[in-house]
Length: 164
Image 1 (cartoon, rainbow, N blue to C red):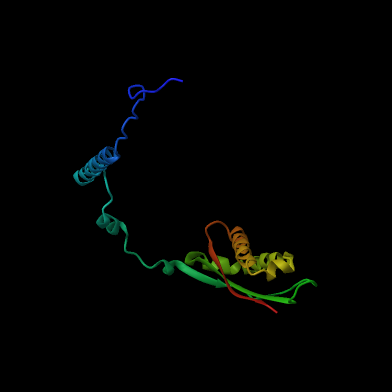
Image 2: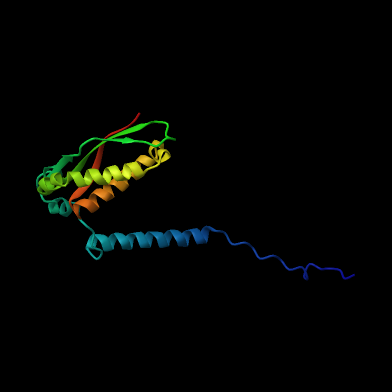
């Protein structure tokens, strides 16, 4: 066997400290931050001014000034045989632009027909499920918007939804 001498054993290279890497990173971040600040403050990068935003908002009447609520006749729907409850009492109002109020009021029989048809087509578990109310409301709103025409009905406000 060969003997190893001190000359044959190679020394492991010394590990360089992470101080140099940290220093380079810190200098780079400071340079980037300083450059960004200079670019923003000198106008090279356009930034929106808060004063300009407040000046652009026109001072008009409140959004509720253009709103009218058209009440719909209450409906009582008989639920199927397998339902826990036997009846659904439903009442709602349509939120419309004030200029369409008379037109929407004249169309109330059409809205009631669509409401009645949709609610009677639902199964008992659909109505009794608490999470289903949001889906039903969205479906009813969409149907009201189709009947009224685009842009006339803003929202459907359910004022009564009672199972008994």
